Image (tube, rainbow, N blue to C red; front, top):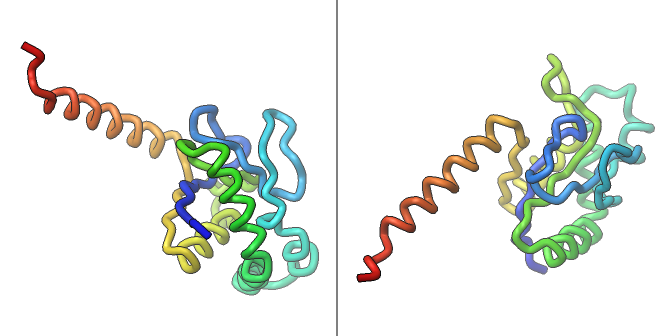
Length: 151
């Protein structure tokens, strides 16, 4: 199975149109805008059964869940990548990582994607998005300058 997925993560609150395809990974659905649901990344059992445990144990339980549902994760992300071939899939949930001591299953998933598939999955921010746009514009200008003259 191909794993050439282009992934990023963000919170529903910070997500901006144009960042990519909204993919819900939270137990509760977002009502502000439509999103594709990725059920296999939702932490149903982890948070209900482990909220009393230390954070590292919660993360270990979630990663175990991802190992168990790996085939479903691959199928869903591959399907979405086929449907949106030139788009980033943005894995979304409710957590606000700007708060001190905040942690989130979407970042645990990003770590799992790095360990399991060698993928870098950035947390998208306004600053990161602006930097990527500047780099893309600069690359287009360079490509135009490199073209031979028409006459």
